[in-house]
Image (cartoon, rainbow, N blue to C red; front, side, top):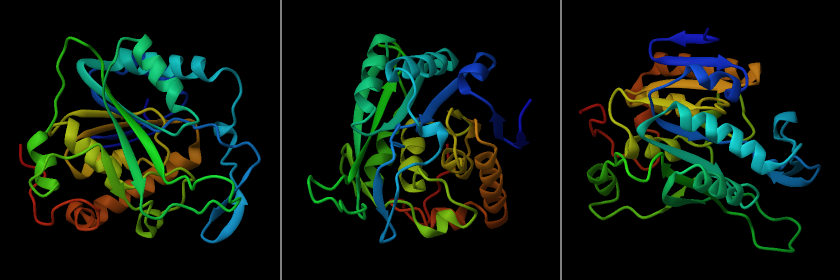
Amino acid sequence: MPYFKEGTFELYHGDCCDMLSTIHDIDMVFADPPYFLSNGGLTINSGKIVSVNKGDWDSRSGDIDEFNYKWIKSVRDSLKPSGTVWICGTMHNIYSIVKVLENLGFKILNTITWQKKNPPPNFSCRFFTHSTEFIIWARKSEKVGHYFNYDLMRELNGGKQMKDVWTFSAISRWEKVNGKHPTQKPLSVVSRAVLASTKLGDRILDPFCGSSTTGIAASIFGREYIGIDTELEYLELSKRRYEELIKNGNEYYIKKIEGLIDGFDYLKP
């Protein structure tokens, strides 16, 4: 039973591996799994030195390959034969994810490099500033084709083929007005993935939904959404963000999302 459901926006409370056996016919998965960076270290946020710890859900226990295999296998079983996955990561988890995807028979399509315009500085001054994250785009099957809206991606890129390096700002203040999630992705990044690989009415799943940026993007552009998370506070944050979307309307967000064309009809077939 959903924790929250309104229209085509659904939230579930629990471990995705326990819940995905009843969820099927998914066209696209956007997953931002734990990077396991909560190790007691320090970073800089808004000019202040703060702990990198984000919560127990980001604390590493056990083998990372086993963790990734379990949830990616569950996701794979929920996908349509033509379905694709987008999985976020850094050097801390992305190599494990690639290995698991290959072992499970996925075909890797692209490795997107998200270059941040405003990354936090490296205050240790002992190595280069971390200014990128990676997003692996892969399809479920080697033999079954996938959907790619090439024409729209080209139009968004000024009439030229879109490259696999996306330069966007990190999360904006207006995306946090309903509360903060420590690893919240900007709507600009997730919206591009949604528009690139799904059609109107497609079903999108986020197994680690957090504040449901994926769900907000899905709703803006006329897709169905299923989000799962173990943390009740983030499901409540997701609800507040959805209620704000309903209040303000799609066009309010489209005008704010970086990388879109103002006035373009994104809801046309």
